[in-house]
Image (cartoon, rainbow, N blue to C red; front, side, top):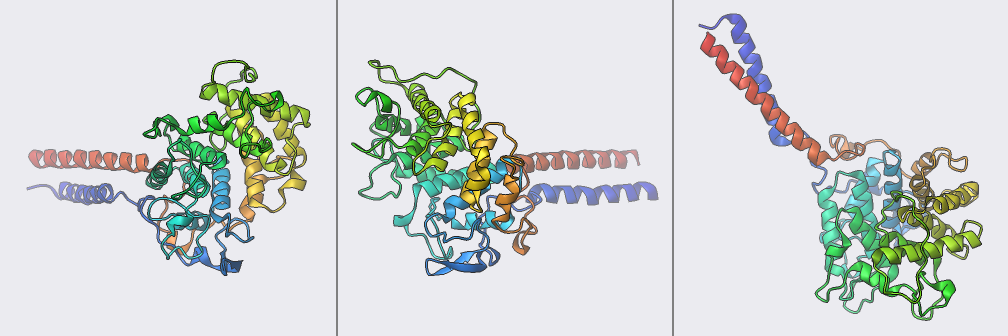
Length: 417
């Protein structure tokens, strides 16, 4: 008969084994990819939007009707890039905006009401994909968003801002979709239509080439006969360079303008031609692009130039932004997030950029970064730059191995007794 000491040891081992096996079976905590019910917290209100209230879970308190998902996504992406934890209620709000088919509208006042497919928005969806990917806990949500983008690609490889039966592709939507697809870990070259066209083919076709005036070559315009658009150009170059937000700085290379006459440029050459135009425009303008979209164009150009291997030009523009940051940033979450992304892309310190602590200022435009009651038990909702799918899988494997070791030990104990 086993001794009392061995009986106690075996009983303790049995309890531990049971606990470990239960943990391995359940995964320990709720999956971050489980559809998240929208709690009342995210929709407590202060102002009016679409005839209804503005959620307190939003970053910024202006009417979100046209940019709610975009600004929330940009803010979350920027905060995540600095290892600053977004408020859980802010993430919950964004999750609640995703439609059943994976897309996003610009804003839904009542997420309990099914999405109107005619209002789903390519740029909103693309920016939300980047935000969810930045949190690294929402692979299923990201995949659903990418599937939605795939389903909306047009025959020429492009994307329309608002897809529909008569939709026409545009540079803004195509660039946004391309960057989101890259962020999700998929090559845009795999998004080839039955006509053999990819998103980067569509962007290349919209670029001003050798038949344009020399000063415009490499840039992008809003349409045939329209003037060159610096913001469109910066967005397109970022996408052609397979850049993400924030951009990962590529190794430094020489500026390479479009060669005319010459062969049709491939994707990389098209990206470099656009980067050359941006660099020349920045140099002529005192390290900013000027015009009505000066701020947005310059912050995007910083990322585009960093992604295409031009750190000196990107850094000079970032320094111009820093010099005027106190005037330009205000209390605007989109501007604060854009400054953060430009700073991170060029290795600047975000907590002293232009004398501002950008992450703190951005965080202060939104909800308090404390867990809500509905999310107190969802500890893996936001927990730094960790892939919880991998973590939970490893935890389960370790638990099973420990349990097996304990069981073998118990059997040996019985044989010895």
